[in-house]
Amino acid sequence: MSSDQIVPLVLVLEDWSDDVTEGRTLIKRIGQFKDLDASQRTGRRRHRPLFLLWAIAQAVHGHPRQHSWTTIRDAVGPLLTEFAGAAEGPQATLRAFWELQKIKRENKLWEVAESADLLPASGGGTPKLPAMNKANPLAGLPEQDYDRLTTDFAFAAWAVSTLLVRFFDHEPAPLINALGLQELMAGETLDGLRPLRGEPYEHRGKIGDAYGGNRVLGITPLADGILTVYSDDKGPYDDQRVPDSDWIAYTGDGLSGDQTLSAGNHSMANYQIQKKALRYWHKPHNGDWTFETWAVIVQRRRRWGRGEDGKQRREFVWILAPVPSPLRDSWPPSVREALEQDDGMLHDDSEDVVPLEVRSAPAVTPSTASTSDSASPSSKAPKSKAPRLSDRELYQRLTAAAINTASSRSTPAKLAHVERYLRSPAARDAVLIRSKGSCENPSCLGHPTERTDKGAPLLEVDHVNDLARGGPDVPDAMVALCPNCHALKTRGENRRELTKKLRTEARARHAAFLKEDLD
Image 1 (cartoon, rainbow, N blue to C red):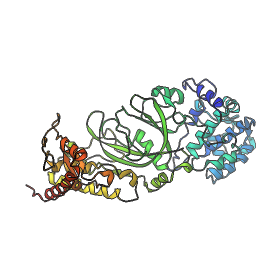
Image 2: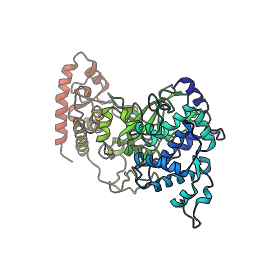
Image 3: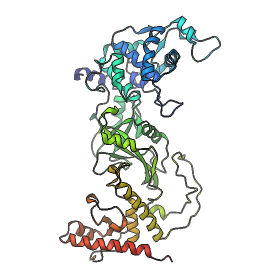
Image 4: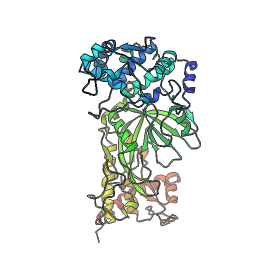
């Protein structure tokens, strides 16, 4: 579509609060459709969206706004069977026909003439099929929506695209053809969808003005009902780019305390199960908010992180893979492979990769600690003292965790290209324990026991062989170095000789530490 068609569409949607303007709330009302079928978590309610698509197609083709029940039944029934899996024939058509007009008045998308007279005297939610066939009432879109769709094809394309993305993202082309919307949706199937990738906005309020949705939450849908996540480089969450890829490690919802599978995290879990694409907005330092890419969730992990209150807590990490569009046939093979490998389960790194700060706090027994996905944010598990582990026992546990992590990274399956270059917190913590706060270079001439202003060892954990060059991410191949020795290893004139010495030292210290007797 030309830019002349698109510009008016954006301008009329600047203020979502003005509900009296004709056509302005249609996208918002479409957003009220629920994605999930109440009877089957992975199923989608496609009957009513398909009805609405058919009605929009009638407006685009210039057909009358209202049609008789029997005309609609005969036209929409086959579509429900083919594209919504309806196996109940006319009864399924009647149910969708009737449920669509039962939506609250302010969100109404469908009108049935004299609907109150069609219900049986005994009451009931849906008229009987014989009575409906006999009465044969007229039905169609609300007049203001019909008028808008017949004159603004860019807006019609936006409405159609939104319904396709939310409910028919597998193979929309056959449905587009069946509805006769090939001309409206010419070019890329979703050219009419808004916002466009790359659209900049100064702040969240401007995004809300243009496209609706919550103006504060980090995980929330726009007015069209499509889930959106926001990542601010200056924000409180530690979102990261996965090294050597364009994938994103997106921190879950919840500023302080252990995160739970509720609110935004619950929505993310549903999108992961359904393998649906969401919108990813990003705000760089001193930059604008930009709709950067569509993305799908290929894995859910849990780790330790620091909340807004400064305390360590368990948090979700959603691994997002950018995709060209929300339509599945556009997704690259690497993303499809990752989705096939993803079992939808939680990969919990918080159990064996525990920060030193947390291990030094009062112990909590595993049986009483609350770590489940569904734990309430306000639940407080009773604390009881557990035996403290010695440095040697901690080192053994962390080493085992690091070896397990490194082993998974060397396997082609299970998102290996994401995990391969991630540094293991377990390995790093193990090396710090082994160092006992002192530089592990036996020839250190700097400040081997120097501390930070917070009293922590002034040490940098490094791989003897660079991780990027295939160096294993395990303690016996890593060393803790003071800043001076780290610089010598990285940029020093004799760095090759030093690397050989450090390789021998790391192996020796690792073996010796494991053999130390418990006092």
